[in-house]
Length: 531
Image 1 (cartoon, rainbow, N blue to C red):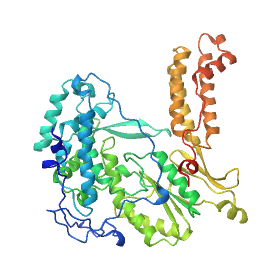
Image 2: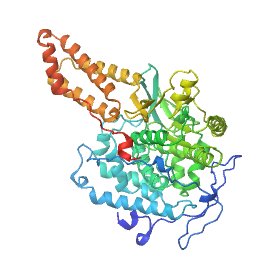
Image 3: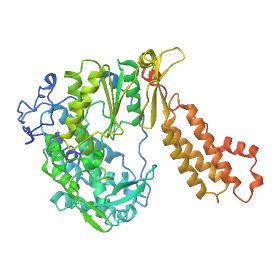
Image 4: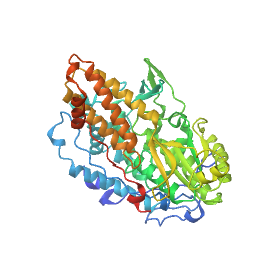
């Protein structure tokens, strides 16, 4: 594959879009105009731009800017691959160059549909990268083909897949539906797409991300490249501490992946994507249905859970149905300051005035209803929270300010040693109990192992737990978690035949050797971001 072809056109020229005026055909448009962002970008020679199609800028709020976490590069996927696929540097550089050209074209042509994208998807090198990025041990879909089996004739299989995608002969297969237990005892349905569907969806999502990452707003953090849960947590912390926030609206959109309206979603994709082949394949995945108990079921709404492209499609849907509208509302309707942080379907908003919060919630419910969405009644509430919440509630004789949960942490109004307002973040107790029960269950299955083998496994569990929950101010809860793991380990060792060998002194030595002590991995945003 030549670099010129990867860049999307002849002579290395970037992909040009075609300007198309878009109308939804429904009573309510999902595009929210913004007066100071309505000017079309300068069109390159040979393109046609029609004025009047406004777009909302993806420039984040100043306080929402957080420092990106460093991410390690992905190593070569393990497996019996032929030697010609070991050196991937040159191929990756060419693929990245193609995506860079797409991003540049999007920046230049803000009011145009992007065309001529599909050849980036069926490019054999991109399909290969998508295959290598999949988990080798993942379960097989309805076709029964595993990652290893597909890799036995990888070059031939990818060439055939690329040709089918090129000539339009590719057919999406139903998603295999299975159920996994949840912490509360219920069953969570998940979907397992066929292997080739995973490959094509991942390649398509990579290309579409190059387009939509230029469109998405700064307060959206879920399922986006280069963004993490801790960035969302830091942005929320900075907003609560440094902005005029007196009320917090904690929201959750009920079943976003199951409630997405297909007609609306296709119209939203068509608003920015003018390549009919891309849109047609998105429709194929939406209409593929699910296979449960050997029977295929049609799906009228939602995206295929478990698919590589589902998170992106959900973000597109929420971008047009919520993000743009909420951004316009706080600019034009709010009387005080408003902060927004969204991670997938979990949303936290801070308001200066209670009337703004109540008005926004009422308007949001009407807005979501147009797109077949609704707020979860049990997970949506308005609470007094902020710098002066404790003082005001104390004067009224009310108890301490309420707390709210976000991304695994309880957020609490507190004060620093100097008496300044801070937001304390502690591990959600239910989350910690569920994790401890999981450790206890797996430890029981490893009772036959030698103590060093058990300790090595428990050390890995603790390090993984610390990697997420080791934020400043949460050390006490991490110490509790470590102590509970040590207690379960001690009980497991004493249930074995050599009970007398495991004294308290011996247990202390084992814990000191194998169970790491928690340290702060994610420092306070005040120190890290210098706000």
